[in-house]
Length: 139
Image (cartoon, rainbow, N blue to C red):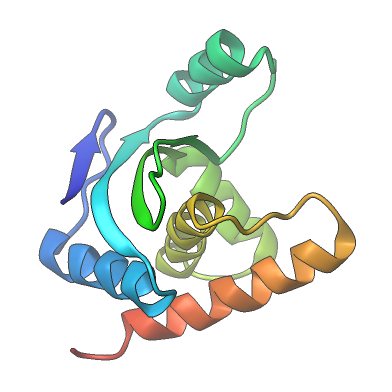
């Protein structure tokens, strides 16, 4: 089950469209959908999680907690919509594209993809681009 929680002023326009897309992203990589929650927060909310659980004292756009069991994707994906907005401006893309990138990024981490070095970062970016394109394809 895909769930969306909003702990800031941000709201998704069409939760069903996003939920369908998340399902396709997961199934397209040969996994099954478990329980995936997206929690949308502001910068300060994500900073508190970063400090409390990861001992990091900086802003970030996404924090993913992995509850994957075998090929069943489950996890909590916390996203700062303020950071997404800033990143969209910095990279000169629209907010929705950057939001999709971050949402896909969290899922890809749950599927075992990494971005810890140059080579894996390139693969991660290619996968993100592939998944963003899927959003615009009707099922």
